[in-house]
Amino acid sequence: MSAHDDLPKLLDDCVHCGFCLPTCPTYVLWGEEMDSPRGRIHLMQQHVDGEPLSGPMVEHFDACLGCMACVTSCPSGVQYDRLIEMTRADVEREHERPLKEKAIREMVFQLFPYRRRLRALRGPLRAYQKSGLERLVRRSGVLERISPSVAAMERLTPPLGKARRLPELVAARGERRATVGMLTGCVQGEFFPGVNAATARVLALEGCDVVIPKDQGCCGALSLHSGREDEARAFARRTVETFESVDVIVVNSAGCGSAMKDYRTLLADDPAWARRAEAVAAKTRDFAEFLVDLGPRAKRSPLPVTVAYHDACHLAHAQGVRSQPRALLAGIPELTVREIAEPDICCGSAGTYNLFQPAAAGELGDRKAVNVDATGAELLVAANPGCSMQIATALRRRGAGIAIAHTAQVLDASLRGLGRDTVVARRS
Ligand code: SF4
Ligand code: SF4
Image 1: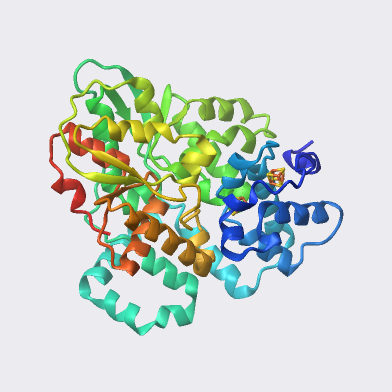
Image 2: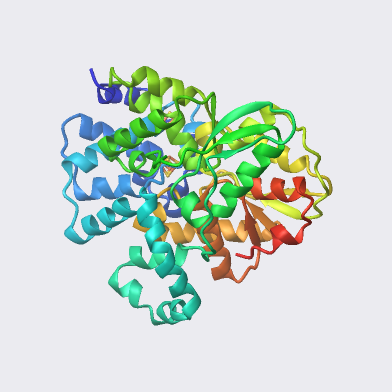
């Protein structure tokens, strides 16, 4: 029996009450039943009953962000996260996508989960950003004409600084309280090296030996959330092998943490790996979740800054981590945390969503940027690289110069007494 045999039973859990509809970003945008969780569940049922996957059916599944807002709002406990993952795998197996779409998807999946390939791209991208070519290309609209997905990729790339490599061990400051493994991530590692450096520093300042395996690979999140199950399993096995010797694995990217906590389901049918995967899933902790459990020890210096905290879907809905990042921020003297309206509505990043569905993602990004701007905060704090890139792009489009940082970078600035300028200098 495979995990996919559960699909009909999981579909039966839905009583079609519609409570999830107002929390679904695509339903909020378009008001179409088939672009709501309930509508998509209806389409899944049709497929289970023998209806082949048609182009329009696939469009409704593709338009789903996989944000899981419907999971946390459903009173019947419908596991829509599992339903959409299985359905996306069916789509990848059974549906032939148009050639151009296939080529773009292949390019994305042959690039983003591979750090060496991303690293090789950093140099040319930095030169492109620094030479002024970026402005010319954007103004010409040429990429948009080639492919809206390629244009989105270009637009979302953050300004790249110098590459930074972390050592394999960052030793605890003072008496050691824990030894943790740290996942550096693909996009996080190559596009946001400062976030990883801050994460390791904060963990060490809080008394942790931080083990950062050099040969770690992709956790498989992008593949898992896109229906590429075999690829996701291969990445997961490698990650399990890399981290099973440590007691705790700290992850600072919401999408990666959520995928790793899901390894128990992903490898459940593999007798050689199921128990090992379950053990690694059980010791995976989000950065904020881990630090709140550990308790503060390092001295916090004042950081007089007003921040808006953004709930990444894969942190809030998928991992239930909402209070911990807020608690860490609130523990910094003189820092004020403001809430963003519509916190449950996705920013449109959603893994590869903003690349493959750039128009819908743009609408959601603009909606989020309006809500962020309305807080009057000087700094947006988000714990997922995808969200940071997506909201930064939307804020730029809006002309709002709000800085963006990861929770780890804010904490790092306070623990090291660096002052507010170090965090508010990172303008969107
Ligand atoms: S998914 Fe849950 S909330 Fe949505 S219609 Fe089904 S039972 Fe109701
Ligand atoms: S995962 Fe998000 S976009 Fe997809 S149906 Fe649920 S709420 Fe809507």
